[in-house]
Structures are given as C-alpha cells and as structure tokens.
Image: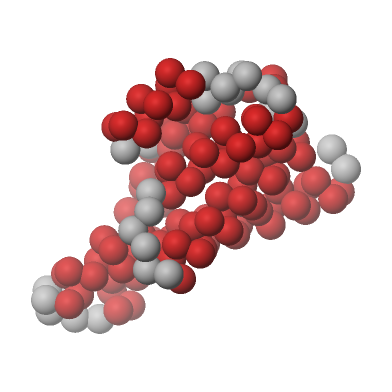
Length: 136
C-alpha cells in the first residue's frame, strides 16, 4: 500500500471517528446534562469517552463483520475503495451533524460501502443490506 493510501486511510478513519463522536455525544448525554443530573459538560464528555471506548473494544467486531463482509465480499473492496467509503461516510455524518439531522452513522457507513461497490462494479448482498436498513 503506498503512502497516499496509508495517509488517506488514517485521515479518513480519524475523521469518521471524530464525526461519529460529535454526532452522538450530546444525543446520548444531552438529556442528563440538560436536566441537571450531570452538572458539567466535562463530566458528560468523560463519561461518553469511557463508554465509547468500552463499546469499541468489546462490540465493534459485530459492526466490522457486517460492514467488512456482510454487504459485499471482502475481497471485492480495494484499499482505495475503503478509503473513499470511510471518507464519504465521514462527510455525510459531518453534514448531518452540522444540519442537526438525526441520521444513523451505521447506515451512512453501510450505504457508503454499497456506493463504493457499485462504483467498482462489485456485487452487493442486497438481502443483508435491506435487512440492515429495516433493523436500524
């Protein structure tokens, strides 16, 4: 993998992580903070950071499995396609957050995979994709 793809993947991944955090932090802590149960924005941020790390550590394998092999075959995704998919999902999530639209980041990620697959001419597992859309 050349340095462009390596840096692009790193930047896209960090950007997507940041947009997910900014999209969900106050959605999950807003009620507790707004009602006065949590008094400090710093406390809310520390709590959400702790639980995000727990979730990413112990539960992200399910998302990784669905996004990695449940929508398209893993071997059909190229490094460039993965980078574009992550960056696109991050842009969509950032735009939704800025517009204050409550959109699922999981759906943004999955449909970015679908878009990358269609652009590359790779087959899409539509059954899994439609079930995922209905469940989330």
